Amino acid sequence: MAPALEGVLLEWCAAKLRQLAGRIVDCLGRLTEEQIWLRGNESSNAVGNLALHLCGNVRQWIIHGVGGAADVRRRAEEFAARGGPTSKQLAERLEATLGEAVAVIEKLTPERLAERVVIQNYDVTRLEAVLHVLEHFAQHTGQILFATKLLAGADLGYYKHLDRAGPPGDWTL
Image (cartoon, rainbow, N blue to C red; front, side, top):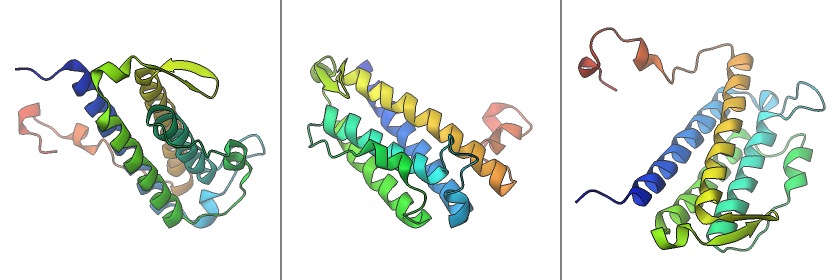
């Protein structure tokens, strides 16, 4: 019997969030503490701010909104920080937050996906909340990857396997 589409989708969302978080953690490890908190200008966010923001967003939308935990987010502080947690601390916070969020996603049942919740004054289904977080997380991951390439001056190597010659069956990932 084929797996239910809802389960396949949720499993993919959880895996994609883990993958993106892993790339952010990798980027944090490639940057100096100064680079993590560097802003191009006052209307731009530093990589550190984006990491804090993603933790807050995931906690509010998934852990609180979908999972029912208390809403403890202080969104303005995510952007106001001009320093603070080290790269190691940011990575640990991100990994812990994602661990909690993935646990919430993995417990969702097909029946609960269509239930409506209110998060940040948005009336959405639990499925919409998960997809919103995935989209939002991916957008900011792209910003962090771009900033890391710019600041570190190096290719991050996430797609080197696509440069291999030969038919796809010969590739080892």
